[in-house]
Image 1 (cartoon, rainbow over the protein chains, first blue to last red):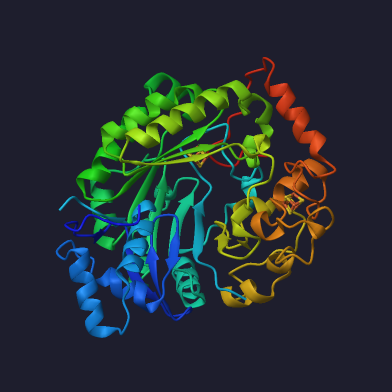
Image 2: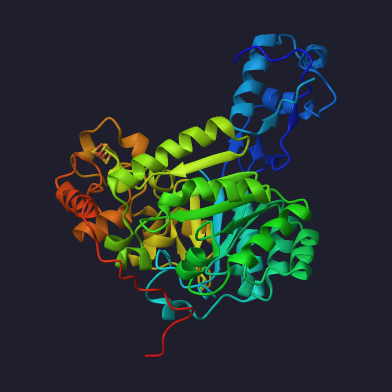
Length: 92
Length: 358
Ligand code: SF4
Ligand code: SF4
């Protein structure tokens, strides 16, 4: 499940919180039973998952900031988190 | 050394219910000198500083603490993800609203079965309807809801109905967790351990439900039936820590049963305990491991299993978890599993609500 619907507008699941761990100097995703430690790019992607932007729009915004943003990596990242129910991918 | 992710704050071991599968310590009397509100505030602050990101407020029944709202308020103020683990007794609308305001993030409500008679019988008091009301209230106030059912020989055949119930109340997650044999559950193990056939059926129901439902279905098998032990706590004193009602600090709640030196938040700072105390360092990493773990390529996967289970089953906490089929002590687990394929006595010892008078 690598390629996501072009029209889906990903958003963080309601019970998930994106925050920063001072002790680890890393962004983290908090869920009822787990913590996902992220890297800076991961956090940047998730900050754009507001339920408004489509995946191509997210990639376009990231391209303005980072030199290389492979679309398939963004998709894989989001699909992985969707499988863990951190991210929702509503039909567009 | 890594910092812990989660703090399990066992606020009290008092409970209005008396589940025979309860994993609270048998010697409840040792925990009656409960931490004060200020002591919990300090504990939470020290935990956050240490790198803890989640506070699981549990017990016993945490709602029996009159200062629960203040404790949640402090935890939320520190930016911790706060999770209330409750039997729902005492979860009134007013309390719920105050907890919501204080910033509680998530509620887990336990239920004993899918129907009043059985649920109330297992819980020891009429509580089924209150639990359902509480679940609805959790959703109404906009929280994510986890419904938790501890599975055992008496209720495991009812998983399909439990799932239906969870769906009906609008749960976001359902946790079907087979009993862990500590505390009172250990006393009652032989009456609680399901048979192989019961498990096979339960697993089939879970598989089917996962395909059908949008709800997250978590299923924890009884480790007695698995080939390898569970990776207990993600490794001893590695990702989680527990603070007991009296301020004792442990890698996990069951570890109070082990003959290890005690450490208390009343005497030392949490960071110091986490890093230096003998109880935290007793089984950290892999150096303590005996054979067969010492030379096993799974040692970073399951950490040799559960120390408390090793102690319970062999009298030596540093042995390989007997659940592992490679353990020299595996026959004790095999014998319990064999006994579970026969009819068993259903006599259960309920846990008391509070320490018994001596
Ligand atoms: S008696 Fe039941 S509800 Fe109370 S703490 Fe034990 S398991 Fe939980
Ligand atoms: S021998 Fe030890 S490390 Fe290997 S699988 Fe068994 S418990 Fe795990």
